[in-house]
Image (cartoon, rainbow, N blue to C red):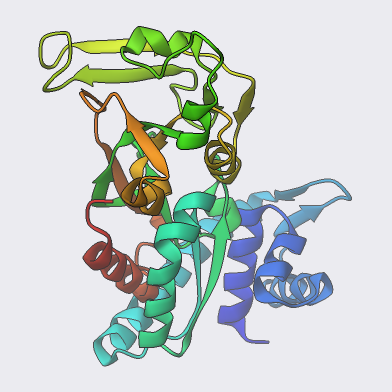
Length: 306
């Protein structure tokens, strides 16, 4: 038995909460993971986990051993990682998470370039719109856009982004008789707005008066909008806006090309939004990973303001 590997497996099983999740990560059978933990228990002469068909929990001995094992595995990873980073020989799997739209449009080219620079690294690239438990999912590095609510994460700010009002020319050309494109924020209330539900604001869109606005510079406004489509997917929102279904309140990076070519039009540019920070975050348990540090530095160097 490789005791260090068995300890690492045990730690991940506790973090993930299931044998199947760890088996999927390691690309082995669930039975293989179970056997590693069972061999560790036999070696220690102690029961670490209580397994039922629906749950997994630590015994009293398992709780004590878990904290020690997690600390030891992290210290060994730090020592090996520092050596490999110094030699520029990063190896093994790196699990990276991001939202679907940002991951596809902005992060994927960076992932491709990182892999080209580090041929011995393999990336498990997981895209989700919505909250993800990084520890449970075994994520090494994740991109978070907006203010961070989880203070337990190790965070590195790598840029900012902002949202703008956008509509496709098809929507603006086909407005009902008597309706005009928005000339003021109040006009938005009469339009069909596509609501993205994975932000705290949802249908309450926030603005700050900039140059040219009909209110003093810096004045804050919140407009409650409505529409016939709401979604938790940035890709669905993108498709809806590009097909001319309505008006969106979107990060600029989601439509860089369309805004540049004029297919999509920015509305009411005199009303600005508060920039949102972009962070790379790492769970405390992964902060010593040389791969995670190298990837974070690589992303920071290429991303900047988005």
